[in-house]
Amino acid sequence: MSFINPIRYLSQILFRLLIWCLLTSNFRISNLIIGITISVILPNVRLPNLNLSFMAIELLKTIIAFPKSIKESVDLIFLKNKEEVFVNQRSSVEEDGSQFVNFLDLFRITLTPLSLVTRRKDRKSWRVHTIRNRK
Amino acid sequence: MLFLSYLLLFIGLFFWIWGTFPLLIKRDSLLYKLHTLTVADTVGSGLILIALIIRDSSHWPILLISIITLTLWNTVFGYLLGNLVDN
Image (cartoon, rainbow over all chains, first blue to last red; front, side):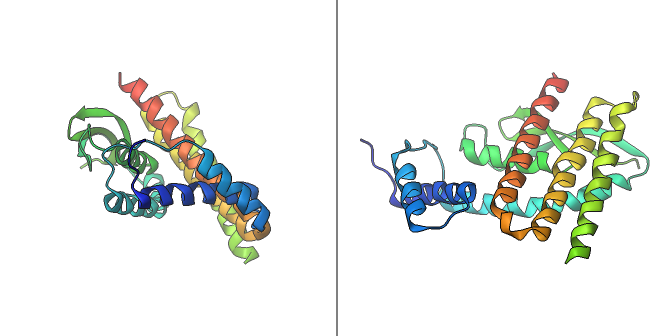
């Protein structure tokens, strides 16, 4: 059996327990014991090339994207003379970096109404469809 | 609190209607429709669910799960459709 980073293992267990508690919405001891048992029994997730502190920053950025998406919706509604263009946006990790961070980056760009990732342009950037004001 | 809930509910409903209306317009491109659907589905539904959390806070866990799954699936399918359109 390969060596598992204890911090990573603990955060994985806590994440599963959080989802379990949200789904069952029940904080009694018996339910918590069932939740912990299930979190331990489920197989370990393999997330290669993942740096935990880097991932925390990316997660924070993703949470900030939620209020930003409300602001961009209002921007989109009041946009006059709109123009649709494809731009290349730098991704936060390269294509062969952590899959999870890549997913978070894609999620963050696509979540906001003014930009939408269509595919990877090259190793370092996304091809993003955006709407902006015509100059 | 009830006023805030109504406010969010009506903003969400406005986003829904504004976002789905371009589906009926032929000259809009498919990617533009995806952008407006993001406004409707992700942001509009999110605001409506937040309004429901304010109104009935005893059911917050299930409403929070709905917000998370809605944003996740909308975004993933938005990317999927965008990818297909671009090809």
